Length: 114
Length: 113
Image (cartoon, rainbow over all chains, first blue to last red; front, side, top):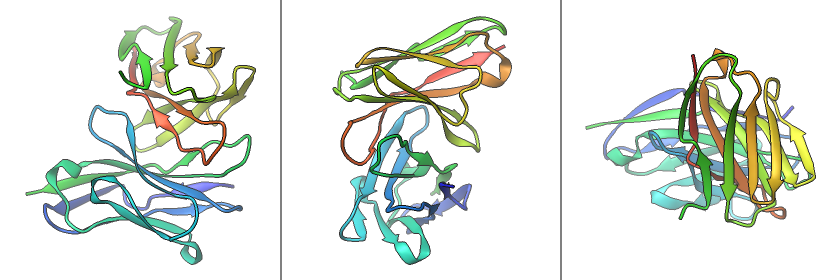
């Protein structure tokens, strides 16, 4: 069965420090992978997406993610975290097939300390 | 103007009441989705529609129904609301072709007393 696992429920990072949020997926076909961010009281905004090609993808707000097929992972990174990055982050997997929808992980809440 | 709008944004209701949440989009997308979000559970799919005549149940459809009135409108109904349907509800859209990238509305916070 398709699934997405975000092992970390809550992470606290100091402002200016680097960040890595983990995402592992289980999917039988070639996956299409997404990271979304949800700021408090807001809807979900797409940070970045991977469909094919270069396994390191760049997104908005200085985020990047690396697709590693051998590890079934799509981890999100940022070299220097800003206080405004405090939010909930969701990894999702989908496929280019009729009759499918995205499968979301349960999310990781990021807190930023000063 | 927002591409995906949801009304109402907040709603408090009582057990047993019928509630309708509405979603409209100006993105011209064929596919529309309803999710609910609960703390620690992420987003779970309630229903999705790939066009006006194609409606499908998601992971947690029990207690919910939907109506796709037009390409741009997708409504979610709770026929008889119960307290465990208290949650944040999101509508999303995606194009018919492509990689299922979804665009989300701002959400409706529903409280059932």
